[in-house]
Length: 280
Image (tube, helix red, strand yellow):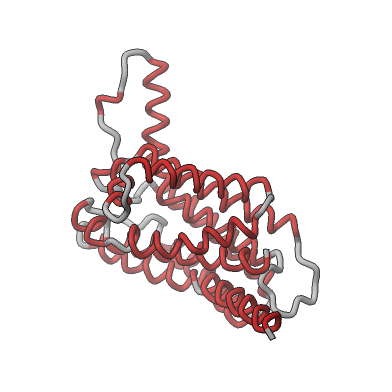
């Protein structure tokens, strides 16, 4: 009796992960519309030019709809990954994404010689982008995992290990970015310190843990175990860290719907991790 019930539980969790991941596109479009409406008061343009924005959102809704109904899920998961990659690139090129003052690197970091200025300048640009685009990259990886055939209840075709491995690499890069944020962003450190005990020692342990999980995803070793550990940790991060709207929105001046979009991305990453944890 224990074995069949265990299989049913794993199947349920895998289906739950696929359910969450296939609906991310809907939340992404809704949160983007609300964010652009929030920015309209200050007369700021959307991240993507308006004609292309409608095409982008239409493609996202179309892919999410077909994935949700299970119609050619692998094909539309791949299409969703391509769509999100193009959308993220267009947002990056548009240079309209808003970052609060807390994300900016202080001017005193511009040091004495040109080599230092070049290196610190690259660090500034990286720190401005890492939080936003690392999550989008992880969602793209989740779509690639879905496109590989992972998480299918009745698999008619063999899964594509190459697509799954690529998706796992994207998740590994996302975890490396989390380690980077914990090391270089005082605001991220404060967000964690507000909810954990042990101070900086605990932060260092989290960096080691996230780094170890990243290595597992990047190398392809112990992926299922790493996904199970991450599946336990991500809900806590979503609820306690990203869900702390009073800290991010009121104190750090992050746009409300920008933070809600990030929360939605993390929920989608949790869905991808659930698939790997049960059918990796």
